[in-house]
Image (tube, rainbow, N blue to C red; front, side, top):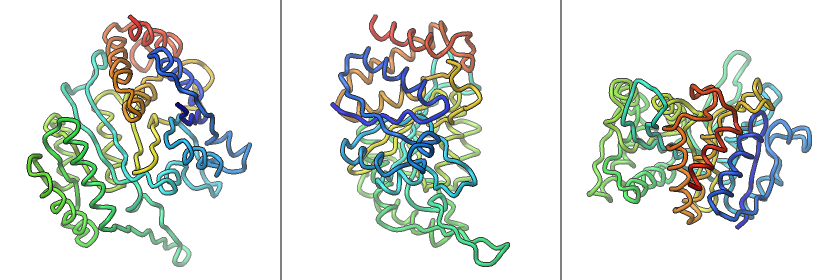
Length: 332
């Protein structure tokens, strides 16, 4: 099968190359179709996300993406925002679970953050009214609200999860979050066998700090989701170990959600686990579930063994050593 590969920039090419080694070792035959995005794309195409990259994703439907840098203060639109809007990747899905060998203050965390990806303040609809006064528009629509909540319930059903929590601030943003809450209640009524609760976003943050194990599937609007998904990653060791996916009805982009870390780029120090686990999500998406499960198990065994780990995981290894360890456990 052909899948688009966007190496990105910074440590992106290193971690995606490591990921391709793992996928090949899992026995999945993928013809990677390279595509540009990030700083290298600016130099080559004049913009960080060229149209040719979008067309390749439209053609092949699925992409694996490394971290990309959008130049700040240069008039370029965020790569991720444009990907989500142009391809209608309306659902950001971030599984968050405790991993052996990764020390955190929490244990037994196992939840999924489902974030609406196309609307809200994060859509970047801003303009200057007069100098010194900027207006940002928070647009919420009924169809987008319904489909993201329905996705959360469908995900819960297929993943064997039992509770969906809708996170909101309807007591303050009565019209926008009020509409979202109304839609959530309506969709929840279609899934009587899955528990549903609605909770203010600030209360959810407090609960996550006290005891994140009480949550199962969290669903929310765009900006709340951006903050909560990173917060939850911190509960289990950080962005270096958490996978991510941006899904639509037609296209899917799987990505490591950490930054491009230009300070260590090219030094072979980067931890590839986030992009490897994102690739496992991708394989599950395209029907290679057995390989996806084997990759996840190999990552767990590597962390348990504690050999060859990168410095961010408490080891003295590098990108090559941790990748080799994952492959060793994968083929054992």
